[in-house]
Image 1 (cartoon, rainbow, N blue to C red):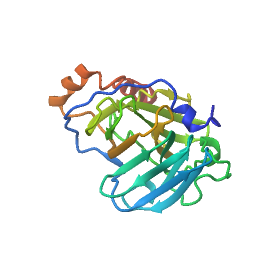
Image 2 (image 1 turned 30 degrees about the vertical axis):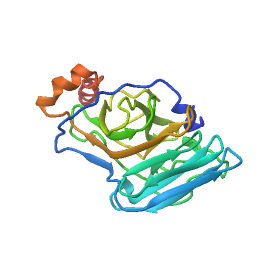
Image 3 (image 1 turned 180 degrees about the horizontal axis):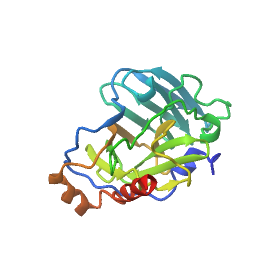
Length: 256
């Protein structure tokens, strides 16, 4: 599983998340402020599959480095990165996937030049990130836009090539930005040894392999603590938070 292509990982089950106005506490651990740039890669693909990559320094990104990539599965024009006041983005005229990797190490994204990205071959693990800290129920918060239905984002948090968690988030609001939250304790897929208090790499992926002409924007990617009480019931009613008390129980068990 650790050498599985990341595009395959994103083809798994989708975890639905609630949308709508939400107030978050002062906790946020910002993965990327999506400022600066332009930090983009583009690809005019005539003989797919093809890959384009780039590495960019930015103080507002965790670890100080953004590794950007885009991979084609059909002919077309493909772009990904941070630019043009639009925050993080991917834009495809064909089918493919792209995104950003934050692993704290500047260097080649496709290290073995095989035209694909895998956790075992291409991730470095240079971060030392605790996404739990003293929070009993940490949440991943994404603010995103999709121009087509059935779009999704994949988020990977990894300790090593064999210890990681994947969160698949369905972008259920089409044509406007919306907030999505998921509990750190409820990944779509994970290895048993994943430890959210020692994250070495983080990745965000847009999966456009199922349909062409997808545009996605991401304005916020952060870890936050449980929202204000005024929004808790609204989120629970939407099914926005799942397993949020699970991590509290895990932490209590570890402390015992």
